[in-house]
Length: 143
Image (cartoon, rainbow, N blue to C red; front, side, top):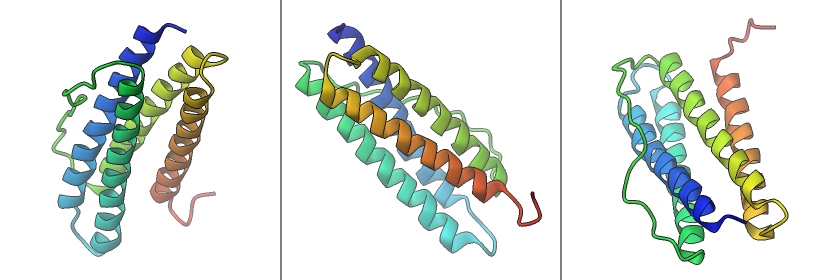
């Protein structure tokens, strides 16, 4: 196992998850309209989950002898705050995370069972988030 590459990728995951904290907190502040209360709660729960994911990545980094990054991933502000736009941007963020976790799974497969299971569970979690957002974007009239 290329420990340096694993640490590098875990740091990229840490940065992405920290960006998720900021992004979802921002989105929660920008929700207006009739569905504000449940959507604010959902975005804030997503922010908390991103913080948990960032912490997990940081713990693995230090367990491997690495140093957790102090950077935060890309935070492009589109100034588009319609609910569907924020959900679509959230979905793109989840897709990036899923791809990083898949890369991690390939790097550690057969070398470190705890990291392999961590990566696998995070891919599952990201897929579940993607499904949830897709459902939120669907209309009851969609087939």
